[in-house]
Image (tube, rainbow, N blue to C red; front, side, top):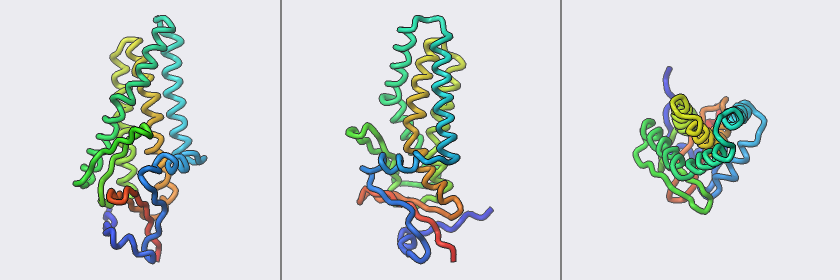
Length: 210
């Protein structure tokens, strides 16, 4: 199947050929992604189901394991904390390598401590909607798969720790899912996106049918 020709940034400014779906400052990522996250459609319902499964997995370990409840809750809490200390950097660098795989050269990770968040930016690199979905969901698939595989070999307490990490990491993927939903809502069109680091802004476009 032929890939669509990638436009330039100049091409994307042609309003007769491309319509802007969304643009937002990188300081506004959280409210913008929430706008797309809380919609009753297939991607969000699937994401809700994954969250419920993660909670159910942790609940089963807590209520049916042999350790003391206090110990279990301690391991669960440390698992939650591990996402912010360890998994967030790992998460962002999976985005980083996914962007590099797609051909981006100028990629970096920015941490926003006031918002307790991080952002992977591929400066002026235009990516199709389909490839953006790949980049956005890569950490969700890779990191959560590693956690689940590790659960096969750990003790009960280690599994509880990992279940806490799983719950918090799935929750931390909410921004990615929101942006995926942004693209999904325009799935009938060819979509494109890029980051403008000089203006700290991201843009999403769709092609206008002739």
